[in-house]
Amino acid sequence: MGNPPGEGGRPLAFRAQDDRGAAYAAAIERSEAAFAHVRRALGGRARMVNTGAELAAVAAALPPEVSVLLDGVMRIPAGVQPGPDWTPAVVASIAVLAERPETAVRDHRGREHDVLVPAVELSSWLLPPGPETPVPEQGQAFGLYDQMIEALEREAAGSGLRAVSAVLGSIADLLADDGGVAGCLRPSGPAATGVATAVQHLEELAVELAALAEAEDRAGDDG
Image (cartoon, rainbow, N blue to C red):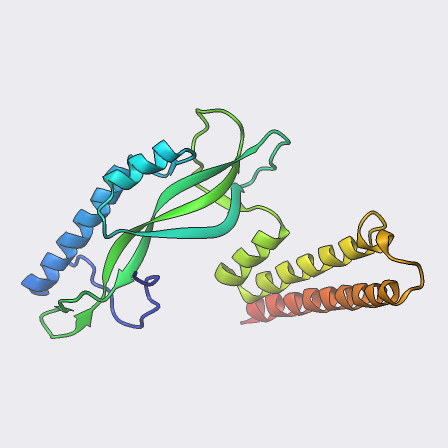
């Protein structure tokens, strides 16, 4: 399996206007043909694969060497709030990886390049009901935990700190809720006292991280 583009620290082979040699050009053509094959297998865009038959149809149309990735974040369409009747769906979309080919790809100056290769990513979405529901082109993480994971992996440091702060605050609220753990503990017992102390620490840590997020945002603006 390849790596996300840029992680290997090696240059990537891209189509260029100048002549970089026959081997380089051939590698670009193979890469573009592989992406075209995967796009055809997906019908030209992301598609739902909610049944075994739908997943099997996509798998049968894919080249056998194509990697399959799993996105651990639940998503919803960008800019909307899900309704109570929304249901989970599995979406297959094209992803981009970079790999070091077994046969080295060098330009005319002898520099060795990684090559872009397609993969298929399976992700979980929460979507309105109905068989004709289109797959959104833009999505966002759903739920505090998934928003935190997305922010830590893909966003600026301030956003990541703010997302962790929100999760810690939510955990503190859950622990303190009389309808949850707190309501099941013997009043003034050691567990109840310990949970109350933990809630206080979580709340303080959430506030501290939120303040650090603000400081990081200000530092970024000043820079």
